[in-house]
Length: 140
Image (cartoon, rainbow, N blue to C red; front, side, top):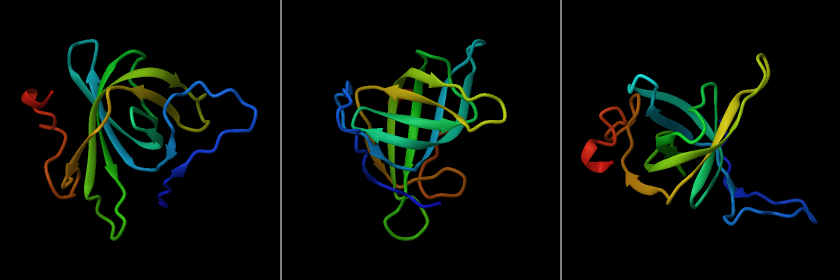
């Protein structure tokens, strides 16, 4: 999968309401939220774009609107194949784009106070701590 980081250019003459510049970025995203039965649900996706205070995640399973979501984004490496930087955040789901069955994948937008950078990554074989005792209670 090719990774692309570049500023997303807006159409000339279109009123832009966003306050943050979005950058196209294809990075692995692991996210979790509290379900109806108070259980922690965890899913994966890929970022479509990211800004300083939010992101859009493409996935087959979206959390509900206004859910508080714990996120880890595994940034693609500049060299090699193993991610070496992880962004972590607690975000709020502000929009869901549900695709019709059989169509492209769905996705959701999140917004929050910003991401924290963590070196050393691990999830399914990568190096460093993983998400599932991830974001221990003392870190939340």
